[in-house]
Image (cartoon, rainbow, N blue to C red; front, side, top):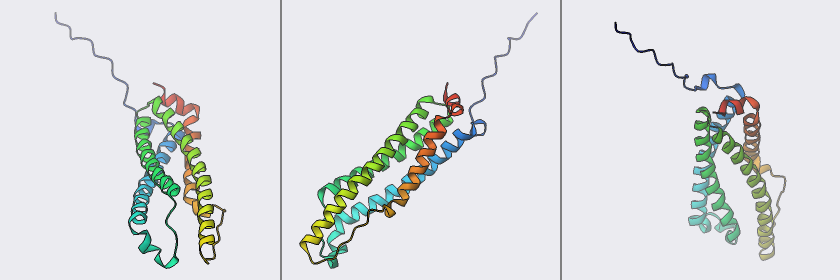
Length: 182
């Protein structure tokens, strides 16, 4: 008599966005929002850097300003490079967290923490360079110069900082660790 082979065990269902814990899902959504902000910011930053590099004299001829200091160029270029790298890594980590990869969760937490530190450092360095740049303008011309240190222009960075902190907190929760632990 012929007996059919025993059935193979059913594989585990593939991880889906629907059965992901709530905070992990929220972190992934926030990472995609940060990805979108980063993509738009990278394009806008590249346009501004190229425009300043090629058209600075034409744009600011009426103001009799000296050129942008070299240190500020370095910061601008590094900032754009960081923005592009962070944007790509956020997308990669978001996809891999959905696939339950624990290294992606750890990488996302480290990425956001380093990004927070670099944002604060950029604020400090940019403020210092901006102050010295404006001081040089005031000394070299009869232009009235004022500079505010209230960080009002960094409101976009503040939104990114809040979202990054939320991603770190959400991915550090026990449910997120269990989800990504495989």
